[in-house]
Length: 180
Image: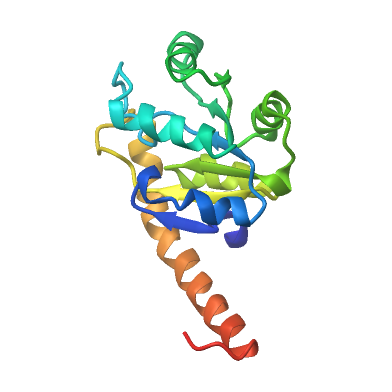
């Protein structure tokens, strides 16, 4: 189970993601969480930086889709602002919404990255389909009350998953003759 909670990449924000490196990995689709990944929770506007990042990703050939557990009106509004398809009421980590997103952007799990701020929704959901998962730090601590409860469990689990990833990465480099 711990393996399903481990992101493939852990970065401070979407702006720290090397899109060129993702493209070289064969990733063409980006399934994006909304709240605390792209915008602060309950923020009603997309920033200019976010709009630029989305445009840059599109210009580099990526196909994007929002997938959020939030209400349809909010998610659709951001989808329209960013000019990307959107799936609301996703019930993440269930696979249905991730599959729907990949249908909308015409990708498959091996060519899709799931990007989000929560281990038990975004990372678990993406890993269940064998997508490339990227965990970002939440933009703010201001969150829905149930999310705050889940964060407590995340703080216990995340160090274990990341520690095991570093050990596995070091062993892999050693077996291939590379130095850490």
